[in-house]
Length: 560
Image (tube, rainbow, N blue to C red; front, side, top):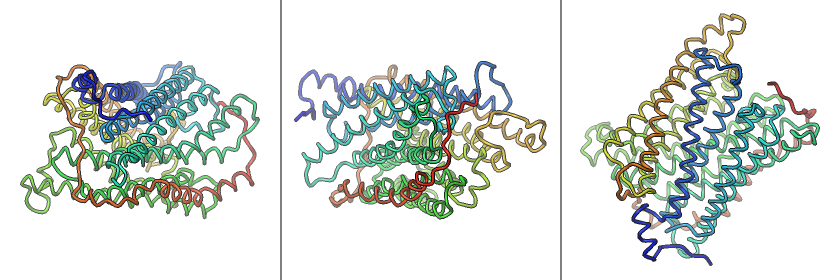
């Protein structure tokens, strides 16, 4: 059996001093993080162009389509930036908490990296050539080039390779440490990749049917079934990003501010609930589709809201940690502890903003999930604003905070006070820009401004003219956001190559009750079986209905 734990050679020890962690593991994580922030840079520029065009401030040139830019922005930000960041972060944490990656796990990580990069290049090439302006949801009957879908298959295969690596390293550690609970970070890693792996299976099935359909081999496709497969994945993958942010909140943030985890057992219950309850929520994205029965819609509305339970548990646990730390730092009175938190430390400020933004983001999610309220906002910019608030604030801003300790840890460098200020500035600029962008999108959506459309006056409609002020603010928000994004990208690569050498800790907090964590929580086979049963309850009836009572299929259509 391969073994790489605890390097003992002088060469490895020397390398460890240079990079802060094992050289080979650090290289792998840094490669993923480099691709992640390169995607953020390009995707951010696409977002600015989209925002300026959509607000009517600066129309795009004739050779560049709004929907082309919208597709590129969605794929780069929602799939590439997030996915590659998550793999880099999780593999680094697995290496630290499980004493190193196995050689075969590292190989699987590199195979996943190669597949993902090749897939993304193929996908983005088709978008750049104008052969895939199908948005990041790629709903049929809109049809892209077959190479677009083949590229997506490579990305999914890359994800599966990385998932296998996480499962193998976890299982290996468990064999060596029988009777001991897995470190909490690794436990989160297992939950995240279990959820991600099972969520990716439906979209893989969808894409494999879209390839022959886009080639003309299959004359038609079942649109409703494809949409169901996509949203089983699409809804869950957003919650995977949230799951990753939650892992940093529980494991790293208490250590950074000098506190302890509220409860190791509670954190693990949150992980189990997020794995079991997430996948059945996909249908609320199709809640206005007429092909779904009202019974299924009501069932999914309730199942979608079930995720609120682990979210509320997290809010309770995290703010209990904050209050304890604030009072230890001298905070008095009912809320005096709040002022005693380290607001000037970007490693705390950014994830804290991510947590706070999830409060309105989660409330908006309840509206979107509600059977009646969703009828009002479903096809409007409200949903786009909600998406930016949850993904680009809760998840992305937490990812920003992670960078300021993870990258110095991987590169054997330190976060200087000057770079900390630059990080605070990037975080605040990003936040302000997102408040303008997301806030105006919410308000415009409530006024009926539709999503997924380029700028238009609707032949001088007075109603459409009433949306202009919101869209102007949206464009201004996009400009401010890009400034924050550029500063953040600069900070990331400065931390990689220019920051002073030194040792930076991978922050892992502990809980008073972690020695009494029951071993039944490690029974992943049981949690997966329960998850599959819940998925079956949610999707079996509508899936059979879509197949048995299939509507007329659709041929591939291009509207551009």
